Length: 248
Ligand SMILES: NC(=O)c1ccc[n+]([C@@H]2O[C@H](COP(=O)([O-])OP(=O)(O)OC[C@H]3O[C@@H](n4cnc5c(N)ncnc54)[C@H](O)[C@@H]3O)[C@@H](O)[C@H]2O)c1
Image (cartoon, rainbow, N blue to C red):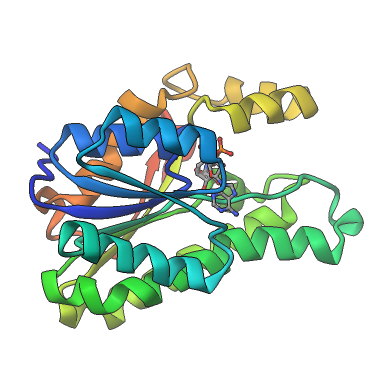
C-alpha cells in the first residue's frame, strides 16, 4: 500500500512539521525527495538522515525561481520528477479588518502563488510520467474559521486551482488532489499558545478524539495519493482530520 519505489517527489516545506514527516515517510516507501524549505538546519538534518535519497534545497517557495530550481534539481539528481507535494504555507491570524497588505501577501505568496509556481514548473516533467500532485487545503477554509481570512481564502483558492488542473491535465494522466490535515506540529503548538480558545474548540470537535500524528496519520494518506493505489482519483479533497469535517 502506498508503494513509491522509483518515484522522485518534491515536498515544499519538507524540512519540518507535516512536510518533514512526509520527507521521512516517502523515503521509507521507496521514493527520492527534493525537500524545499527556508529552515536550513532542519533541512540539512533530513539530508543527512537519508543521504542517498533526500536533497535539500534552501529556498522561499513564494519565489517562482525556487520552483524552477527544485524541478531542475529533481531531474539532475534523480533523472525525473513523478510527484509534487505543495505543503508549505505561512500566514498570520488576525481579525479580517486588521489584516494588512503584508499579511495577505504572505498567505497568498507562500500558499497560493507557491502552489501555482510549483505546479507550472513541474508540469512538463509530470506529463512525461503521468505524475501526481498533492496540494494542501485546510478545515479552516472549509469552515471559515474566525481570524483566518487570509489563510482560508488562499486555501480555498488552492482547492479551486486544483480542480481546474485535475480537469485540464487529466489528458496528460496527471492527477491533482487536495488533503486537509489536522496534526500536532510546531505550527499548531504556536497557534495553541496564541489562540488557546480556538485550539480548544477545534480539539473538542475531533470525533477520533486526538490531533493527528504527522508520520502515522497524515503522511500515509499523502503517500496513497502519490501512489498508483489512487490512480482512479483526481480533483478530490481528502479530509485527514479525525472526522472533524465530513464532506458530502
Ligand atoms: N497542522 C495542522 O493541523 C494543519 C491543519 C490544516 C492545514 N494544515 C496545512 O498543512 C501544511 C503543513 O502544516 P504544518 O502544521 O506542518 O506547518 P508548519 O508551520 O509546522 O511547517 C511548515 C514548513 O514549511 C516551511 N516554510 C514556511 N514558509 C516557507 C517558505 N516561504 N518557503 C519554504 N518553506 C517554508 C517551514 O519552515 C516548515 O518547515 C500547511 O499547508 C498547513 O496550512 C495544517
